Image 1 (cartoon, rainbow over the protein chains, first blue to last red):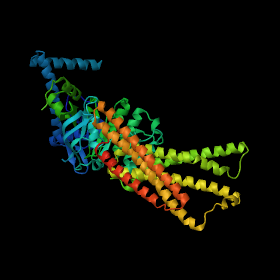
Image 2 (image 1 turned 120 degrees about the horizontal axis):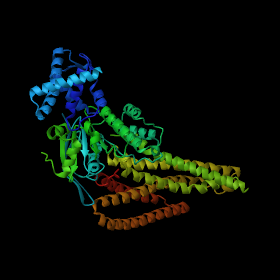
Image 3 (image 1 turned 180 degrees about the vertical axis):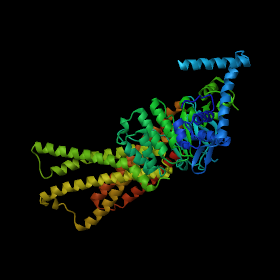
Image 4 (image 1 turned 180 degrees about the horizontal axis):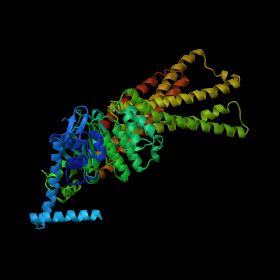
Length: 125
Length: 236
Length: 256
């Protein structure tokens, strides 16, 4: 995996795992690879993985079972919340950028609709 | 968390020339630490002082031991095998290590050698630069100690070998051991580092967490490191 | 910490191999000589004796020199200095392994030479040599003297090696201290001192050899050889103590 060296690595690992979970590469109740294996796969340090995982455990996205490893939570409400959180974060980026182009809230909604229609039309061709 | 290495008020002179002065450094257990600095800044010298191959003034404590002979039981250094003649077979070097270091774990060595694709039947003279460095890494990491010192393991090495070496470091550094790795080009190992230590102006100029740097400065480690030489960024 | 047994094995291996290579070379030289003599048609029962005994001294000297190189390399190569052992143990094991391997080398040579001599002796019917056999009382003297000569030989080699180390380690220690300029001056001084020491040493050796031969021929009181041996042992111990201090405090390995 390629990292942006400007952003803390543990943060990028969290983002990476969130995407795996929401894209259902990792399903609810799935066991995560061992910490060292994750470290080797992502070419990062074991401590960094540890930090990312422990934050995710605190957030309730993954669960640690003593002696068995780490598992994706089966709490679907929590996962829905996570999805909402990530969607909002992405939208926040778009919103901020469009706002910077002097678009009003209504104009932003309009352009987004237009974009989706065009994109849908392009895909139907 | 306990400290693996403590250096207090260390200075080192050679031929009446001051090379390191007032060095204080503490490394906690279980870290991968990058030792950065320009060529000739004293990175290798610092490592040699830790192993006892060079002798300076000051106190160096490794896992609670201070005399060089005792420290050697706790430190594994990537030495360049100059003590062996070129016609020595790798297997002979391995069996020398096995004899001389009670902490040498043959199983670990064999796993590392298999991973790095090292052929023990070759002679030292038959190894390419990359292969030789892989062999040295395998020997160094096959010892079970608290502190590993890798001196510029990537200089003059192709990117495939470099990746293999980085993977083996992640995979085989024991959980509570600390690994100090020197390099003058940090980008290739930045994602692996917990902390960086910069040797500059004959002493330790910076010792900071890598993610802390990214968090607080928003810079890449390489850019942050370079900024130290432009006098741009102040550290606290 | 490395155990003495492991350290001994590790430090002995290369030396043992070198001694065997040297013996192989000596064997080849002897065989070639024999073939040469046979081709010239001058082969006799004593040819073997002359060939082996003629070739023996050169490899002995070379062996001592090779071992000396090995000893000095140990002090400057990380491969050896990183071993977890005290300097005193490193130093003494280094000398001991060299001595043991030299003894091994010498014993093999001695065995080969005595076989060659016996062949010459018996094929001759023992007639020409029998007349020179010493009487029984002289035999006991001979054994005593043989022991003294063997000990003298061992201690002499130790003295040679320890003096080489002494010079090497002192120069090395001094050169790490001094600024590059003054280093040359000091090196010159050290070399002068060393040459003086070497002269004294060779004087010592010549004196010793003179003693041995005088004693051997005059059947006098050869116990005085032991005085020289003790004197040499004292020198070895003093040099050893200084060498170990140098290793502990100043002598660094070659940087990568």
